[in-house]
Length: 363
Image (tube, rainbow, N blue to C red; front, side, top):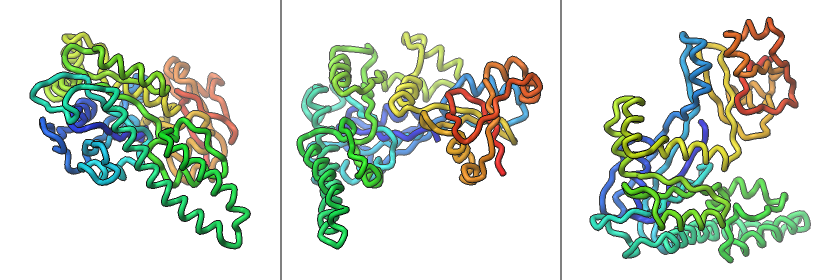
C-alpha cells in the first residue's frame, strides 16, 4: 500500500464525484445531502513509469504497483461533532488514514443545492475544519481525564510532565490550532500516535471546479492553503468522473483529457502531492515471480524497508544489494550488473533512496 486518504467536506461538494474521478468506483452521486450512507472505499494502482520500464525487462513476471486507498465519508455539517447530520458517525472511519483530502466546492450548479445557500470556500473550509478540531478536542479530552486519574497514583511524579504536555496540547486545540502545526513534546508523541487525532494528519485541499476550470473561488482556496502550508489539487470532478467511466483504454483517456485541455488526471496530481506531503519514496524489487513497487517514508533504513516485504526480513537482515535503475536498464539484467561490479552491497545503516532497486539477503 502506498498511502490512504480520507475525503471530507460539506454535503453536495461533490465528494462522491471526486471519489469516482479518482477511483472509477461508481459511488452513488445525488443532488441532495447525505446520499452517502455507508463510507465508500476504493483502491487504485499508483502509476509509475519506472516500474513499467523495470517490468519490461522481466516480461514473464507479474507487475505489482503500489496502491493508494480512498475513503469517502458522509458530508459534514456544523455541529457534526455533536451528532448533527450523518458525518460524525463516520469520522472514526478516517482515523486510520495517512492524509485528509478536504474537498471544497468551487462549481456553480442550480440543480445541486449548497447547504450554506451560496458558494463560499472560506466559510466552508472553516465549518469542516472546526468540526475536525472539535472532534479532536473531544478525543484528547477523554485521554486527558484518564491521564489525570493515573497521575494521582504512585507514579504521579513520572506522569506529571506527560500530563502537563497533554494539557497544553488540549488547550491549543481548544484555541483552534490544528495539531499538525504544533511542535509535539517527545514525552507524548507515542500516546498521540495511538490516539490518532484528525488534525494531526497531513491535509490536502481538493478543489472541485466545473467545466471552465480554475476560477476566483479556487484561487481563494489556494490562498487559504498557502497560509496552512498545504497543497491544492484542482479537479474538474464531473468531467474526470465521466472520462474514467467511458474511456476504454489509457490512450482513449488521454484523448478525452486532451479535448478538455488537461495533460494529467487529478489522480496523478494527487499522488505527487500526497507523496510530497507525507515524505514518501518508492523502491523496487524483481526477485521471485513479481516485479514490484514498495512505498516507504524517507529516511527508512534497508532492514525496515525489507520488513515491508515480510516482517521477518528486518530481524533476519544480512545485507542489501542495491542497484541503480538506470544502470540496470542499460545492462539488461541484475546478473550483468553484478558482473560489471555496479551492485552496491549495503548494510543495516543504509538509507533507502527513491528509485532504488533492491535485493534483500536474509539469514
